[in-house]
Length: 112
Length: 113
Image (cartoon, rainbow over all chains, first blue to last red; front, top):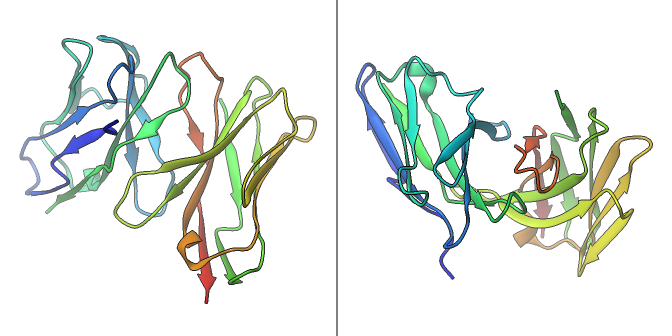
């Protein structure tokens, strides 16, 4: 069974540019999470989806970040415009009925 | 909200020795405590977890213990091998409420051959 798939794996952009990350969760997993991991720290939740509904986005900086999961499967996380402080690893995870969470490999974003 | 503290931040052991990583949590409502291993350039990998209705769980060389009264839990790795070298994260959440994981700060484990 395939794990959580993320793309791209690496992204380098200049500040003020937009960027988007894509996630395909494990088949059948209805819950999808986006986490932010800064260097040397544990992941922090940005947003959680139950099917296509965002049920916890309290930590998402909504002035520049947005996310969608239109059909309750794949999800996209967008930053516009990116700032230097957004440089981090963006992790996607999925679970079945809110149980064990399985993570993808992450997208490493560098903002110059 | 929940807060998870993890110690030590770095741990170096000789191959074959045991390694212990400790975490404390603050929210007594938390009832699910997973441990993740993260290798360089990869996402966190779930290696073992424990729910608050048990005090200990073991899977081959890995074991986790939980003390609900003291609100702390620990990861024990026996007979360490060089491939155990990685960053380990503890986390806490409320199981089956889709709850977000609150992670500790991580422990960088180095196993020297």
